[in-house]
Length: 230
Image 1 (cartoon, rainbow, N blue to C red):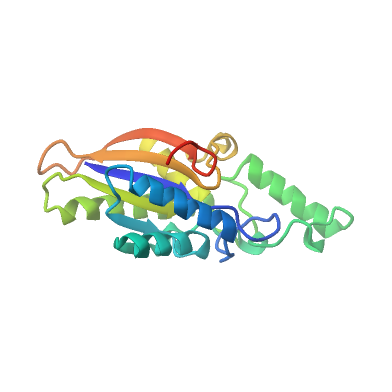
Image 2 (image 1 turned 120 degrees about the vertical axis):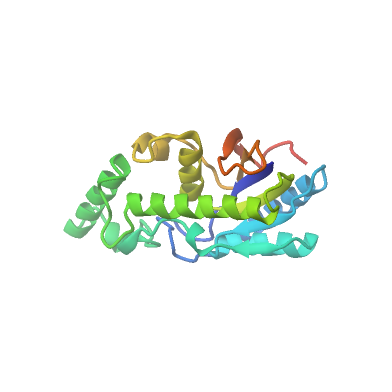
């Protein structure tokens, strides 16, 4: 059995924008609070024995601090980065690029609206398509799970893993596990994966030589910084 806690990073230290592959820093105070909360969870019972992280700073910094503090192995997986929003990635919404007083700003907001309403078909300029993003995350997820079971040499053994990732990444993992339509805009509009939230998935392989994964989603989007946990 493998228990995977998926934690979304805290809010970033920057103005409102689409932050995909832009490597922006997290809010220091929030990151420190998240580290305290994760440490409290570590001390409550069954401790994490592996930390997985996106390489981007808003995930990686707290992952590194937590792993160092508790002497846990840390693995950064390049393919667990957030979706690339192309020309709009990291550009603050209050920049002239998005000024509604200009023709360019009006055009850009129209493209953003089209993307929010139909992300599977309305790819932003120079951006990663939702289909490519889904394929990247799905492949990374399967490789990660397979590697966890291979490490135990085919014998099912308990393992608790902390995964620091992004909202879009967590949604795509949940879509794969729950067999939801990743193309459906409702998945991206209405499934709230808040900053510093915790989702948990349990994976089992009932038979020793089986390669079939059985998933259970224990909970989704539990807020950590404003919850009674720890």
